Image (cartoon, rainbow, N blue to C red; front, side, top):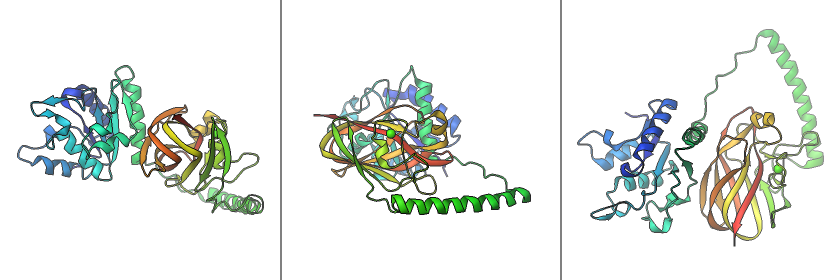
Length: 348
Ligand SMILES: [Ca+2]
């Protein structure tokens, strides 16, 4: 029986050194949950069966891509084109199942062109890649670990039960908060519409030369002068943010941007979290993995680092009239998930 949640796939001739170091680092952080090497499959086990079984418990599949990943050949030709190539078998199996696939580009390698890859592994190129390099190895791997942690969810210990005295205070406090909340909700219904059904809350904003309309599945009601509707993610101000408004971490909530024309999108720049101050950033959840969906029916997963800085994410190129981000997982704090700013980089 195996409990491996993380599968590292790589080509020995291409990235064996990085695979070894990455395995060591991940295994320190997630002990006993990382699987690296098909050589640890017992002799006599059928290779295909062994891979299928190894991937049964796997939640995240990491494909290390070096400069020779796609091009490396043997006497029969390019390895990736051969149906029994073990990297191809592993990757195709992971892509076929609902396993999160993260391509990791090593030492400046580029993502291969999907049109040059066999059909069963070409979808790899739709996934957002992380990069690792010798110079920034520690930093790059930390970013990967942050992403993995958010996917697995970090179990925080429950707070101790309140003492009787504290409980009385809690009841009074809860009642006061309850009354206040009723007031806020009544105010909200009266002046701002019903926050439970904000499906079509939208406004046009200019983001670069694009006219964009933003909508969201939910958003946090205004408090005082601060508002958190979806247009706050495209107002050009890091100090304002879209903040989802449901109970819990906001997984499944979405924000959508409609453009005034079809664009050729190649990169998305995102400010994940509430950038008004480092304190507020730490207090509000940050998205860790977003699914970006496009009007051509395609989508891609964006892995976001847990850092308060602009993050540039490869998105295409894809021709699309809109982008919808669905929150898949978050870095949890004690408040709702926020996005301060999104920019779309296009090509003609
Ligand atoms: Ca903003």
